[in-house]
Image (tube, rainbow, N blue to C red):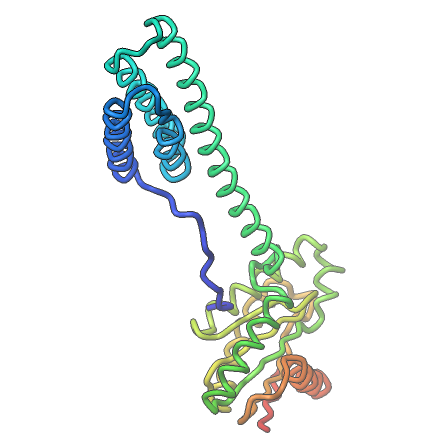
Length: 293
């Protein structure tokens, strides 16, 4: 149960077997480049071509594969240079090979680090976005996330000609819980309310904490009878919690609005359900008012 989420596009992570296979392919490609480098002679530089598998290894396979590809590129270049009877001495070729190794290693490792940091940054951004959409106390969607879900649900209901049902919940005498038992206990009560909601609702229902001691639920594809039954089960569940706090008079008032045709906005849906909830309060609290329009 909860709000629907768009699938996130995360950078693909290659498993150990994939990294081994990818590194093997990269090394094979490097030695093919080395063979071409050898037959083309020392006059034509191939350093740029060696960099391609190094960069790809660093980006897709990680730092270790980048190091392997960098060392393989250096070795392939060195062997091609020696085998081609370079006009330079062995010491010069060795020094050039060393400098190329450092260049390949630096580029490969930096590419892998940038890829890792990019993935980590994306994860942090996703976590921040999720935190901005979730009530930190109860773990339920907050008002922002709830309104987004309502907008999508209303659009879907209008396309399919389906009814829409909204329930608005307000705890009765919640202030007395804080006054008699303290705010820590008050927070525990709110968490228990969210637990009751999760136990009663279906997977297709969308609950949210609107703020303070107010909650709301988008009940998907229900009849008036089903909405009344769900509201009754929620009131019973909170009555069970209230028994542990006898000095508070804790209870639950619920307004349920069933629309045969989806309204034009999430604001109207919430306002109508809120108004029904206040009717329940005015009628004596601890009850549900179910309206059908």
